[in-house]
Amino acid sequence: MTIGTQRQFRCPPTEAVPTARTGLLTPALGLRGVGALRLCAAAEPLRPAGQRSGNPRPARDYNSRDASRARPPTGCARSRRVRERPGVPPGSRSGAGATGRQDEGRRGVPARCCGRHDPGVRKPEPQNLPTFGFLLDIDGVLVRGHRVIPAALEAFRRLVNSQGQLRVPVVFVTNAGNILQHSKAQELSALLGCKVDPDQVILSHSPMKLFSQYHGKRMLVSGQGPLVENARALGFQNVVTVDELRTAFPVLDMVDLERRPKNTPLPRNDFTAIEGVLLLGEPVRWETSLQLIMDVLLSNGNPGTGLAAAPYPHLPVLASNMDLLWMAEAKMPRFGHGTFLLCLETIYQKVTGSELRYEGLMGKPSILTYQYAEELIRQQAERRGWAAPIQKLYAVGDNPMSDVYGANLFHQYLQMAKRDGAKELGAGGLQQQRRSAACSCVSILVCTGVYSPPEPAQRGWEPPFHGHRDFRFHPGLMKASHVVNDVNEAVQLVFREEGWAL
View 1 (cartoon, rainbow, N blue to C red):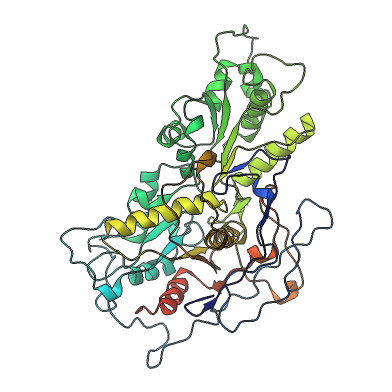
View 2: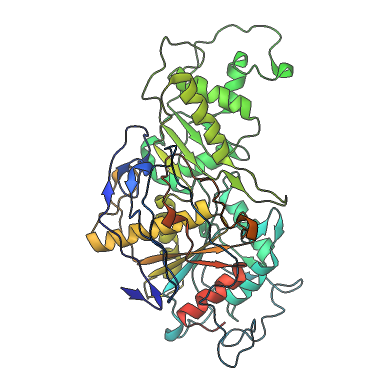
């Protein structure tokens, strides 16, 4: 089947096998264990027309010692399908909406609105109604640390029309989580010179709103920043922070000699038991968080007591942001929350002999995160009065593991759902209110963040798999549909694909 000028792959029959080593619930598919999904292992993501793909390699469990590894896309030149239009100089912005926008967004010019529709603004002409939307990563695509990437400003000059409105629906999907949703929207508004609404921003833990079966439980929350505010915004009303737990049981934190109690306090018997663990992002003092989380899991929520044997299955654990690395101002990537999760999993395995189980893993590349993003795209289109369904999503990111893998995995899920009539499930197996209108999700990899094209001497070298333990390694899912220099080239590529003026 062909959509536009891109050829879609076809998947062999999908086999979903539950696994005993993970308690991860994949809400989008209603299955136990993301690692158990053998989703079209030999298939490849969307490819440019005329581009030949290599022979697919068989899928395997990354945990096996003889596991092969993925090779990232070679080169960061403009995609083959990016061709200049006749009579239009390269890099020019011709067509509707290009004139008079060069000076917008500069100092002294009012910020344009990228969010809700102003009723006073006339509706777009029918031929300009979008049938596609953007899922934009933030770190490494739009910003590096606190500095905006210049190409992002150019991209948004193309995305916003002369009335100051977005020409297509846009949602910002980040694996960051140590900030409030409205604060992230304000930060993006200031950096991009374009008003971003909070409901356009998806943080790594945003889909936890769907896990209502845990909202009433007493949860230990780990991370940094506005932890309690974020937890309550997600629906968790009874939370205990790691610092509060350390204050209640000071003898638990013994690594830092300066923080050890001078006197042994009396044991407490008035502490309400903890019923689950909520991991929202990387903490500041890793040794303290790792120790106290382990204490809670090993004591079945009563860290002031001891048990003869560690309970298993242990208390429910919900986690977000699986990124092993992320890109800031430094020349090399920084540790992400995925590194912290790796430490926790390794310690738990070593101490108990069993594997740490997750009731939910959120953030890219989780399918649930992309379902959540598609729903916000749909709501945004409805607010703008765009009647045509959004049938195609373009996911732009800088991380092959989280952005490319996630977009390709979601694309396979959409294909499987449309072809086989698979049920679309929400958290805990709850049926979604709407079926997905999207037919495809195209992955676009940029070279301004984690990913950089390999040097000639590295062409034969295959990098290690940086994905989470519960996501099996599939070579096809690591290959982007397009590799471009930056987000501005990504927007131009999409507009050409959709026949829109630049």
